[in-house]
Image: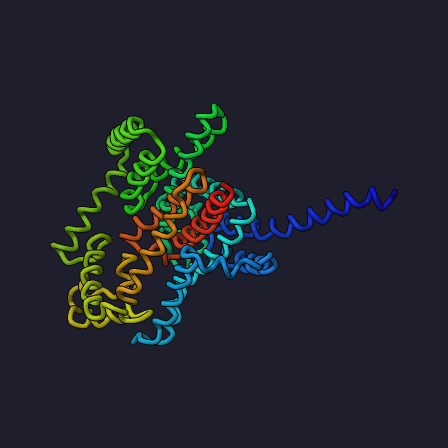
Length: 423
């Protein structure tokens, strides 16, 4: 009789232990998402125990999972970066170092495998949202009192605090806030349709907070350009045509009103023209003007080696050679290791082959998110945002935007594939 009563208890204990085995890696991924807006070092330390915990999962189907394009293409791009060191003229330390920015893409297949099988992806989304919400409130506090910024204590040497920048820089912060603000539109609309106004109001308040921070405190010009496009993408994907047109008109009207009441927004927009004039007329280094010069030179580098490029880590040495004849010109003589365009960065190093893999990767990942649901919306948003912002930056290879892409595509992709398989 005792054995009979203990059997269900033993089964429930085994079930709990088995479930905990799979929850533990998901908790580490949620911790990575929680730390991402705040720290680079902390993220790496959280990544190590996740990889260890992942090794104890049931991995019998893992090799077969890697053969799908959504997993194979990130591996192919990293492999190309590693093989590209063989024909580069850059010093070997530069070649090895240049593999690092792409190496994070190897985490995508691991995340897809994990979250395709176990339903804990919402932990990661909520962790990232909560962390960005705390950062947004902190940013408002720093805007009021710049002495509160952690950058004063984390940076080396003297540092002038930018308005509202708490820990990193305004580009990363704007990227995170824009992502959260637009991602919240889907659950807000879904909750309002279900007449759950309480939670919808809370999410709406968070979205307004993110947008208010970008409008009145600090925003990157990249986010300023891409934000309206992301709103339009949502409107035409998830709203009826009439509602989408009304939403687009309301957004345009709101933009004009906000432009009139926000001096910060007007200054940011005016900087486009000011940068262009400073570079084109005066030959001075500036944000937008310098980008145009980087792009012009990069196109010349690509023409010299169009098929396989100049090799991994060759960008800085190419700019250094081009700067020899322009020592008295601060703009033309600038030496950089980043052309501030993802396509050009890949093409200079790995030619047409690299560009084909890059665009195949983006479009393969887009194809995962053709369905309905929050995971598909978040995944689609992450990929589209990365593609758009990569026109002005190398956001697939940069640390924070790159890890946002890895987490967003990996977690949301696993959830989307799981939903498609069940249906």
